[in-house]
Amino acid sequence: MALSMRPFHANHANYEDRQDDPLSKVLQPPPDESPDERARREQQQREATRVSLEIDEGIQEARKMYERRKKAVKILLLGQAESGKSTTLKNFQLAFTPAHFRNERLAWRTIIQLNLIRSLKTLLEIIQDEMESPTWTPPPPPPIPLSEKARGKLPAGAPVPTSSPANGGGKKAATRSIRFSTQPPNDAPLTDVHRRARLRLLPLLSIEGEMTRQLFPELAAGLNPLPDVSLGTSTPPSLPGVKEVCVRAGNGWKTVLASLQAQGEKGKGKGNQNGPIDELTTSLSGCKDDMIALWEDQAVRAVLRRRSVRLQDMPGFFLNDIARVASLQYEPSDDDIVRARLRTLGVEEHRFTMETGAAGSEWYIYDVGGSRSNRPHWIPYFDDVQAIIFLAPLAFNLMLEEDSRVNRLEDSISLWREICGNKLLEGATLILFFNKMDILQATLASGIRVQKYVPSYAEQPNDVLHVVKYFRDKFRGYHKRLSPKPRPFYCHETSVVDTRATAVILVGVKEGILRAHLQSVNVI
Image 1 (tube, rainbow, N blue to C red):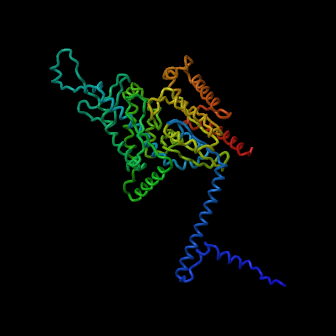
Image 2: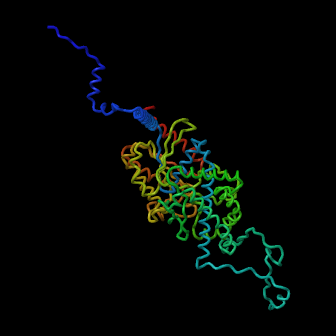
Image 3: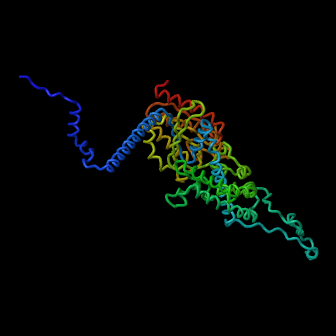
C-alpha cells in the first residue's frame, strides 16, 4: 500500500508557529482595524524602531568609550585641603594641553580679581580689629598753626607749633593722594588716615559679594550652601575668619561666567552698563592707588608682623601684583592662573587629549576634594588608576582648617599610610610630592624649629636639606612596610606655583606613568 505524502512547506510551518505564538497574536492588528488606526499603529512601530536603534547605538558608543577608557591613562590627585592638587592639575594642563589651557584665560581673570579682593578683605579686617583693640589709641592731632598775636602770649621758652606742610598757612589744600606712615615700623601707629582708606575700600567687598552670588547661585538660593572656610589655627587667633572662593565639582562656574561676559558685551553695544564683570574691573582700577598704599604702608606691615600673619603664604595671594591685576587692560599670565585659588568640593574628572609628547593619547585626572570627611567614600571608585600623585606639604607647624586639633603634617602621614596599605590601590604607582617647598624654606629661615612640633626630629640641623631627608625617609618607610606588594617609591620636591620647575618634573612623571601603563597592557 502506497503512502501518500503531503509536501512540507516551510512558510506553512512558520505560519502555524506564528499562530501558536501568544506574542504574535497580541501584535497582530485587529481584524476590524480602520485606516486611521492602522496609520497610528504603523507610526508607533516606526517610533519604537527608531528608539530601539538609538538604544543600540548608545550601547555601542558606551562599549567603545569603555574600551577607550581602558586604554587611557588614569591619575588620581590626593592630598589634604590646600595641598596644591588643583594647582598641580593646572600645571598638567599648561604643560601638555597648552592650547586648551590658554582658551580659558579670560575666565580666570575674574577668579584672580576675586582672590585679590579676598586678600584685601583679610587685610581690612586685621586693620579694623587692631583699631578696635583696647590697647589702640589714636595718635595726637597735628599742631594748629598760631597767629603772630598768639605767639606773643606763649610763656618764655615754650615750643612754638608750626604748620603742617600739607595744609599749613591756608595754602594749597591737600590732594587725595594717601600719605601713610613714614616712621620706623615698630613705632608707627595706625591713624585716622588708615581708617579713611579702609572706608574707601569697603565698597569693593559689596561688589565681590554680588559677583560671587552670581557665579555660585546656590549661595544666593540658600539651598545646600557652600561651607564657610576659616583660616583655622594655621594663623593666629587674632586673624578674623575669611571665606574662600569655593565651587562644586564640574565646570558650571565657567558656564555662568561666560554668560555674564556675554551680557557685558551686549551692554557695550547698547551703550548701557557693561555688566558685573566690567563693574568689578572698573572698581578695582578706581581703588588701585588706595590698595597699593595700604598694602605697602609700614604701620600696616608692623601690625602683620606683630600678629605673625603672612598673607603672602596664603593661597590666591596677589597683593604684590595690585598695579597689574587692578588695571583695566589686565590679562592673566600663565603663572597667575596657576597661582589662582578656587577650592573644589567633591570629585572632579578632567579628560585630556595630549597636545605634546604622546600627542593624541587620552589621560583622565581625578581631583578629589581634600576634606577629611570625603575620604572613606572615594577609594572603591578608583581601583583602576595607574598612578596616584600624593601632595604632602611639609607644614609641620600648621593645623588643619577643618579640625584645629590636628597637625597638617600628621594628617598627611595618616592619609599616606592609608593609601599605601589599601589593597584596592595596590596596582597604582605612588608618586609623592613634597609641595610648597618655598613656604618650608621661609618657615625654617624665620627660626621656627622642627623639633618643637616633631620631637623625634631631635637635635638634627634645622635646614631644608636635613628636614626633607628626615621626612622622605619616614614616608619611604611607610611605603615599603605597608604596600601589599613591592612597588617603586618616587618622591619630588615641588613648588607647584613655579610653573617652569614643575613642568620639568611633570614631564618626567608623565614618561614614568606612561611607561608603566604600557607595560601593564603588554604593549612593551
